[in-house]
Image (cartoon, rainbow, N blue to C red; front, top):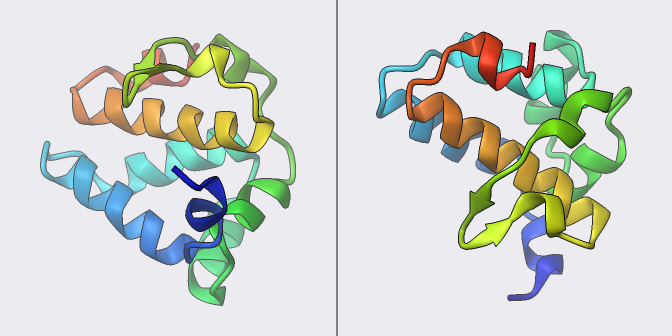
Length: 116
C-alpha cells in the first residue's frame, strides 16, 4: 500500500470515518475527540479547526503540537501489524490512533485507553 495516498487524505474525511467506527459501538464524539487530543496535544478548538480547514492526514500528525509521551505505551495489532514495530514514524502515529479508536469501539474504559 502506498502510504502517500493515506497521508494526503483530508483529515476531516478520516475523522468522520473514525467517528463512525466509534459511533457504531455507541461511543460519543466527545470520547473520540478526547482520544485524539490526548494522543496529539491538539486542543479541542485546534482539532475542530484542523478538521474544518482541509488539512491532510499526514499534516495533522506532522503539526501535532505536543504528542503525548505515553503514546509509546500503545501496543497491539492493527490491520495485522504490531503498532510498536512500525518503522515509519508518521505511519506509527496513524496506527496509534487506529489502535486507540479500536479500543474505544471495543468498549474499553477511557482511563485504560488513555494509559492512565
